[in-house]
Length: 126
Ligand code: FES
Image 1: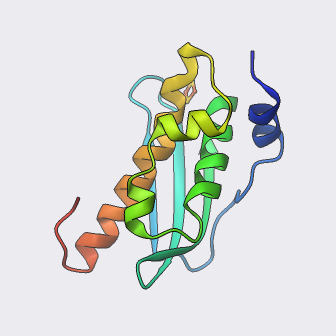
Image 2: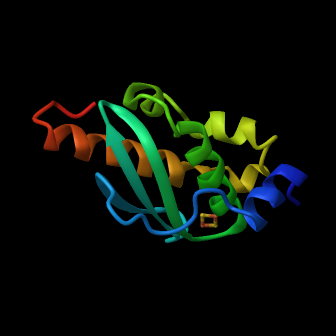
């Protein structure tokens, strides 16, 4: 059902776990299945200098969160904002059609975290 890249990120998720002193923490749930992702970002000068996550979800959700965190590390907030679930699915080499929605969790978490940060800094949310 899953390709090698997806299985690798599921079995060996990158950036997994709680972060001690994050700038922002956010938890989002999937409207489709109820699975959840918690995302921790450490932000300095509008750059994501560290990121970690915990996902209570399926293999596709864990693999997507793992890949997404790799893709936003050391990126600016704007670059991270522009990352879509389709980019993550492509980087994973594809997901079965019925599991595409699982990759949306990571995108939602990243965007919500960025907007919480922006509001905290006195900026309009994107
Ligand atoms: Fe819930 Fe995949 S089935 S995130």
